[in-house]
Amino acid sequence: QVKLLQSGAELVKPGASVKLSCKTSGFTFSTSYMSWLKQVPGPSIEWIGWIYAGDGGTNYNQKFKGKATLTVDKSSSTAYMDLSSLTSEDAAVYFCARTTPYYVMDAWGQGASVTVSS
Amino acid sequence: DIVLTQSPALAVSLGQRATISCKTNQNVDYYGNSYMHWYQQKPGQQPKLLIYLASNLASGIPARFSGRGSGTDFTLTIDPVEADDTATYYCQQSRNLLTFGSGTKLEIK
Image 1 (cartoon, rainbow over the protein chains, first blue to last red):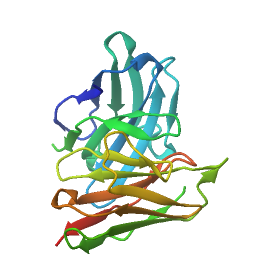
Image 2: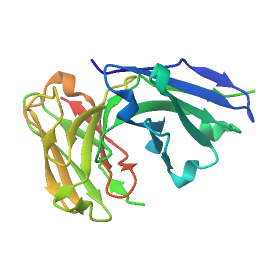
Image 3: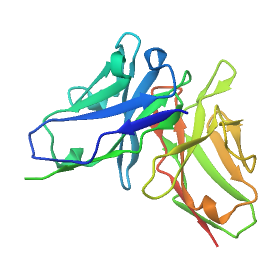
Image 4: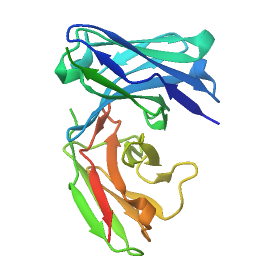
């Protein structure tokens, strides 16, 4: 069945970067879109962007341009998200999700918590 | 951005009907489809897709869940509600990029 397994919780210092991973199985990764989303309690869920695993093409929420960089490794069916210059505003749970045509997230990773603290 | 507005909370008695609404500030219909989707999220878990394109039941979701609406007004109905339906329900549009509502927390009395 479809599985998305994310890397574990991260504790990072302000100003540092972090790379989150999302290893997939059970579907054809190379023809899939993968989205990344941010969830902070209260303000709900924000879509960061998606990447097409076939050619690495991306589409970002304007708010996250320069903050997030999405990449994939087709050989391992894994999606990655780099978050740079972290501040307290970046502390959140981040999810990866398979994204269908019509931009519906039909399968989600378990989430990865990012804490930003010195 | 398209803004989605949901009521923050709803309490429904076990076995009754729950109706959760989502209103958008722009039309999310396009070429015969309504680009509105619904998710369920339980505490400490990832969201789960329930309904896509306003009224289509996602794979493995029981028929107690249904969605309807078009344009700017949409509803998710759970009938009858079960204790396990306690969760937060989010609507999401994909007509113009992707945005989510703030969620409706459903309590089962």
